[in-house]
Image 1 (tube, helix red, strand yellow):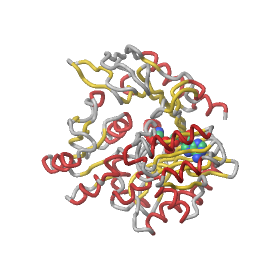
Image 2 (cartoon, rainbow, N blue to C red):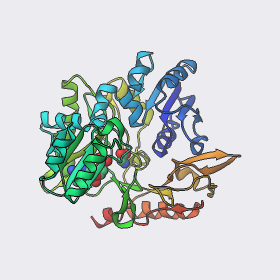
Image 3 (cartoon, helix red, strand yellow):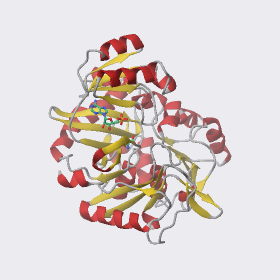
Length: 419
Ligand code: AMP
Ligand code: GLY
């Protein structure tokens, strides 16, 4: 079968590697992929949001199955377009991707279905939003409605900061159309858990839980990033919590979307906070998380392609989705200066036995060599019977990799170990 994966980061590399385990896949393309994954997939220089070119490529190569991974093509309707020309896809259609595409939609949806989440108000008028943040409880959380490269959330400790966040989104167009509507919500506290789940619109099968590390520096200091490392499972996510989440969050979400005529098929990401009042939804993503996927798929014992097709064909109930015992850790090696400004183009070197454990995010080929091409350069994975073993392996491998300006957090998994 000819399969294409849309996207080009570390998450996509993890997916590509896992798909490679299925012998039915004869040709595997990544659009655009990146130089680091060129051993496992044929990388094609078509951007993940260039839907016209993607659709034409699918025709030209007689693609039998497409995995649409990033948020923007999903929200733009890549799945609708490809399915319209007869290509089965893994990923939600445009109507279902709204769960991530619009925070206002997601919040109203949760309210309609009694799904626990932070109290909120939605604004389309900047004056009304400014007047609200002038007297709301602090800290408060200001969120741009639409996709904003993970930068659309501001936790404001002061009135000035809240007003500034509102003005940046609504008056100064910092996030373009994404910020024309703003959600202001209650500040919640508690450990965060990421749960990715397969769902075919009827059945929901949560994957092993994980924990992201979003801040750039050790001890959760510094700016928010796309994620500096992950561990799985997340020790805060006990069996008790899992049962509650299934009853109060996962099933109501999947059933609610189906009831509203937007059945969600694909990977649904639940960003949860375990508050003193119980688990609450911080955000939905309509896709696999990055870098959660890097640890979650490291523990997936079943064949990914088989599960994906069961999702597409709405047979998830019959599918075997098994996770291995033990733990996984992923340490992101970034370029110094990330997430602000950083240099690129430095040669990456590593021992050949480390390479199978590396998932490339920002790397490209130049004159036959791999060089850095992004802020998050690669993710180094370790697995083991216990989290300390997994972490020790990931860190030992991380140290064997060299490139100029290499930078990484030294405390991935620390909070999980303390739990
Ligand atoms: P997001 O970009 O939606 O993933 O949000 C980024 C981060 O902001 C989350 O991972 C949380 O740590 C934090 N956050 C978002 N919403 C809230 C909230 N209502 N209360 C406390 N923290 C929040
Ligand atoms: N790791 C968070 C995300 O993928 O949105």
